[in-house]
Image 1 (spheres, rainbow, N blue to C red):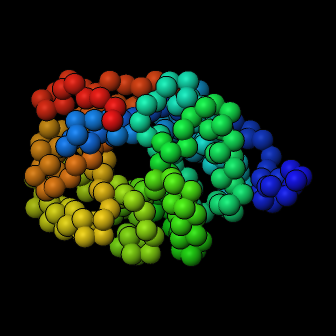
Image 2 (image 1 turned 120 degrees about the vertical axis):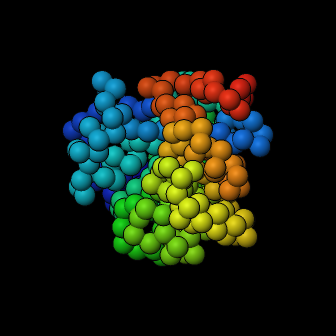
Length: 257
């Protein structure tokens, strides 16, 4: 089998990125099991600068190569850090994409760096307008068939939250931080999240609250039935490292499941 037969056109024709970057890792915890469920890989500048310093270089011409490079860097660093739970990797839904072939970049990286495939979780953000839902459905179906976990990121902040939920069968959804911020004092947000939790329960999907920044937000979300959490109150992203869970009430002695 030739290299060209195992690669899609975007893989074969992609040019090397003109910029470099690395990753930070932020934990996602599951309160009911008192465990670290996953670490999300987040793009960072080589000098530790935020994601904005990286994404300002991403455009329609290089987004596919950027997406593939993110996967390799995330898996490589996760293996070096011996992440013992899920590794959450974001992918760009509007990148040129042939899942059956392009997943081979991830498979090769996992093999090269000895990272277990069964511990990879793929997130796609619906904050970016999805141009072809049938294409995203095909990607998610294929990823699920290969045993990967999947999630919709930034749910409730994008172009079509309920449409994405109805059309795309992921294992998990992540509530956008805009719904989480000050939820303890916002009855409208509480109502939306309460019904989102009930809806996801009926659909057999787990719900993650991201962007949790205060004890009051955390407690309110617990009362609303949320079990998975991510945010600065839990732990800030660790630059090329796995940060410890903050020593605050209720979050003592967390371990990887």
